[in-house]
Image 1 (tube, helix red, strand yellow):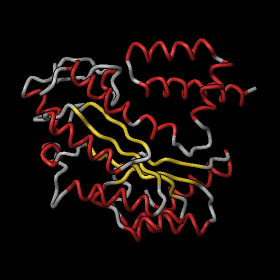
Image 2 (cartoon, helix red, strand yellow):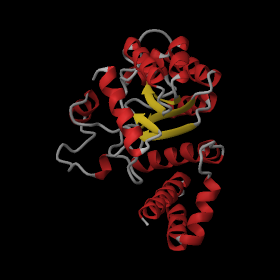
Image 3 (cartoon, helix red, strand yellow):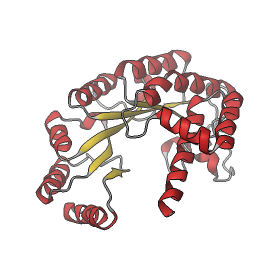
Amino acid sequence: RSVKNVVDEMEHLNKTYGMKGIYFCDDTFTLSPKWVREYCEELKKRGLKIKWACQSRVDQTDEDLMRVMKNSGLVQLDFGVESGSEKILKVLGKGGHGDRTEQIKHSFKLCKKLDIRTLATFIIGNPEETKEDIEQTFSLAKEIKADYTAFYFLTPYPGTDIYDMAIKNNWLDPDLPFSEIWAHRQPELPLMAITFSREELRDIRRHLQNHFFTRNYLRSSGNISFYSILLSILFRRPKVFFEAFKKLLRTRRIDYVVETLNAEYWRMKKYEGRG
């Protein structure tokens, strides 16, 4: 799409519905620096005060371009870091040239320097992955200190190289129905197990995700604090509140509880807006 087409739509949403922020779910958003610069210039030219966020790649971070993005309203960049192991990054086709983990560290340092919030996603359950690789991923996640850190199971979507590899090696049932278990965050167990059992992967992800609970939720500088959400649901939806904590006791996944309560909070706000 052209810059004009995208910004026209943003302006329409802003003026018609009062939209104040937008997230671009496109992992190639920064692929063309020229397009991004023109987009940022158009936002400023029209005087649109819209906060926006997008996905990016660690091999596409340029300080000058990031400053331009920041000055036009960018508040957050999301990166698919995937792993802290150079070996696993190459297995996933993310190796590229040079030291990928150094590129990752550089990208997050730049974001902190420019006061741009960050989200880092990692994948576990990869081919050839060992405990040492998991430890390297954990160490990198702690070092880069993203504002929000999430760990996903490897999901072999049809049409990808990983899917073909999974079928070839009998890691995946080719007749498995396409359902919610294909989501990035399967409820409790991964879709397939390669070097670890499903139960081991469940426990590994639980440990990793719970470690980042404080940074992910309690240090958030968002408009709605974690504590206000807790109190609001406790007094207005006590049944939902206690069901969420029963889920915590069952899964020992703190983030599941937070996501459940957060979804309920915004559901309440939605109905209030209709009233």
